[in-house]
Every structure is written in structure tokens, then in C-alpha cells.
Image 1: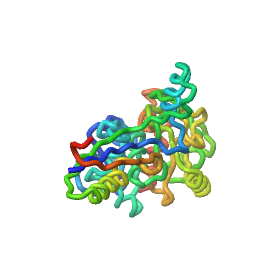
Image 2 (image 1 turned 60 degrees about the vertical axis):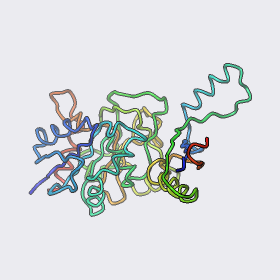
Image 3 (image 1 turned 90 degrees about the horizontal axis):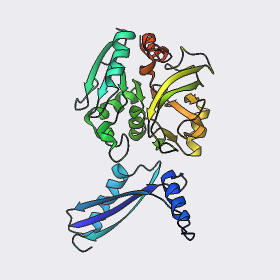
Length: 85
Length: 222
């Protein structure tokens, strides 16, 4: 069993108004060194698979077909053995 | 034969009855609901994807609806030249399904906007808009939180070049690129728009600017 830890965010070229609002509030608290804030989604998949490579392929497919919309979103993920995080 | 309208009902659709009322009682067209589990569009020659929150807008608006049983046949129907109209959530589903380019982002100001807005008719040579004058201003209600139309520059240039933009906002309420409120596909048989023409189809309810669009569609398949 493997776990895919997936993050989906708006593409860099797209304004993220939620991220901007949070960034402004962080700045108002004095966090001047925070230069950019993006808000996205976190998705976990538990994949019944014998190999990490195979789990990777499944997660990649799921991202492409369902979890992210390439018109507006980027995704990234890591695969870890279930129970080892 | 005439117009045979099919209104797809997803779990979470909530403008399906408004569309039914407008087509059945005002336009006087043969109108039926189609439950999302049904496998085909049957004898219908106009398919409406109504507004609402199909599948609770989970993941992304329209993202889960596109995998429903009926949508496979709606895509086939549209690719064979069938007339499909997506209103609000229906527009989001059409973009997710790839029948229309682009995507609908969250409104720029992050707020749900529910009001009547002024639209400009940018192209009146489509089966959806021929009952309007070019550059005519019409008032149609909007009610959405994710109506901020987005596409890349290449797609926008194509939309403009192919006269696919039918309606724009006179006062952009959501941040849409190029003030886009409604577009058609290249084949000119699929329309997606965030404003609700079916909510402006009965003079008794105060505004019938959307009726010419609905009537036009019915006339165009006759």
C-alpha cells in the first residue's frame, strides 16, 4: 500500500485572490520576508499497489483525469509507503 | 417535429425547474427532464445543462458531473452537431467536459454575486443570439461564486477571431477575461453562459430579455 500526497494549486500565471488576501494579513503582522502566498488543495490517495512506480502511474493518471484541471491548475505529489509518514 | 428539449438533472441541480418552466410554459416546446443516470439523450434535439451545484461543487464546479452517465452521450450528441446549452453550472460542466475551451475560476472578489447585470450582444449571427440586435444591451440575472471565465491568450485570440464570444458584461462582476459572459464552440452548436436567460423569460416576473434567446434556440431546430 502506498500513499500519494497531492497538492493542487492555481497555475502561477493566474491571480490567486485568496492567497493575496492571506499574504496581506501576514505582512500586516510584520512577516516582511514572506514574498508570495498561494492557497491550494491537498488530496491523499491510498493506492493498493506492489511498487512505488506503479502507484506513481496511478496517481499521475488520477491527477490528469480528475483531480486537477490543466487549464487553471498545477499539481505535484509524492508517493510514500503507507504508514511511514 | 419542432423543438424537443431535454433538461439534464444532476444531483444538486437547482435551476432545472426554472428551465423547464421557461421552455414548456413560455416557449411552448416539448420539454422533458433527463436524469443523469440515463445513458442517452433519446429523441431530444436540444439539451440543457441547468444551473445549480451538481455534486455539491465538490473538487471543482462541474468536475464530477462530466463523468456522469448522461454526459458521455451529451458529448457524442454535441460532437454530432446537436444543440447544447450550459447555463451557470452547466457552463462549468461544458468547460470541464472539453466541449468549450477555458475554465471558470472563483470570482475575483471571492464573493457570490446574485443580481441582474447588463450584457452586450457581441455576435447576433448564432443560433443562440439571432433574435438580438448587434451590440444590444440586455438585462439577465447572474448568481454564481465561480463565474470568472479564464483562458490563455492563444485561446482568447481564437475565441475573438472565430466570433465565439456571444455575450460580454458591461460592468464585469467577476473578473472574467475580456468581460466574457457567454461563448459558443467552434462548431457553433454549443453555448455556455454564466447569466440565467431562463430567469428572465416571463414578463409577468419583471424581465423577459432572456426569452428571445430561448425562443431563438427552439426556432433554430425547427
